[in-house]
Image 1 (cartoon, rainbow, N blue to C red):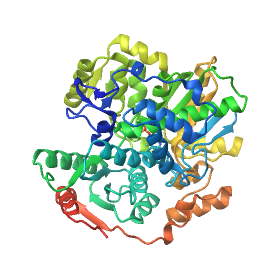
Image 2 (tube, protein in one colour):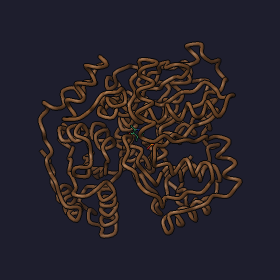
Image 3 (cartoon, rainbow, N blue to C red):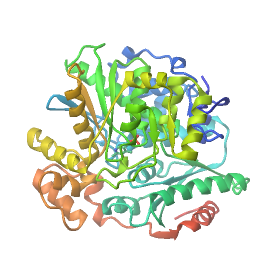
Image 4 (spheres, helix red, strand yellow):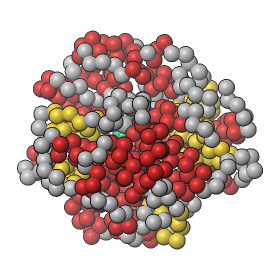
Length: 496
Ligand SMILES: *Cc1c(COP(=O)(O)O)cnc(C)c1O
């Protein structure tokens, strides 16, 4: 099975090339031609451990790799890196099941995919006969950058530069990045907001490609954000993990349907759930939970995507996003119509709006439900879950928890619900402390301590010692200087 652009079926690539390149040359995303091309026996993985499941699922989705190759990559990616052997444990909270995706090296769910991506990328580089060093460029609003650096840290043949908005990330997030170890990692603040950093990165890619600025230099650029199929595929695994756990605990029988509620930003996480469903896992509804930036709630209701609206900075910042890139893959796979997708994406670029055909909207409604929760609702949910069940959740998880209750109230015939938990509460300590009814003024690290003293829930190791760790990255630049900065770094053999 080859991959193809979501906007043009004749632009094809092997799955290894798709991982290496990230984006198709016409700006489309790489996708399998149809989910029917993925053959998979979902029952066969239910009794496996998580690494075994990952091996089977990733080989089915990325057939450039043999099962033996994949097994070794999975082992390298995950062994000893997460708090628990099963990587993504489930816990019962009231009537619901919470799937904890934040037990990895940086306490955010992005660790699941970003631990695996460097393995896939270096193996793909070998398979495609590329000798160039891979230089990853990433713009981050906080979580992705740290998780990506942790994943790529000291992986041979790769280097990574992370740009974040100066003054635009939390103190904890900044400290996580500025203290990053590794001889191949680089962090740089950009004077501007996240969009400036993101646009800057896109401009660097365009300038380097057009001007062939790195040709013959032994370096090529790539990206670690969730448009890369190599970041999406590893996320499919935990939908199976959660389902298998419910079967083993006797909460369901194999074959019963389960609903999943997913706190959503770029639509990568929830799309992985739809992949799981298409691969045969008995998924009922996928519930898309948004914060006040509820562009997806409106879209899934009406079929009209409209990004021309105010942008809110919320207490769940990883979901503050108005253009959800991975939706493009869903539209393509559901319609099978690349010409339609190209037209819609052109309209989005030109006018900020598109409307999908009714027939496609009906298909969306069969698989998805939607809702949103603002900051007040988010903090109320944190307090409510903590008081009722003694469970402390982060702001993103709280959004999903609230929307899951909306979903159950509106759909009395719902299935057992799994709520995806995407970050440790200690990554957003101020909003969480306020949620459980305390003032959170002052230094963010003190707030973290107070949250611990209040709840007695341990602070994850990677966050606990942060204040004392050595700062290794101090660069701050104007956004106009990003290209020079990247070219300078690319010509430097040793960074440390
Ligand atoms: C990235 C992120 C999300 C959103 O995931 P998408 O795949 O972009 O939809 C939700 N919660 C947290 C904590 C995140 O870091």
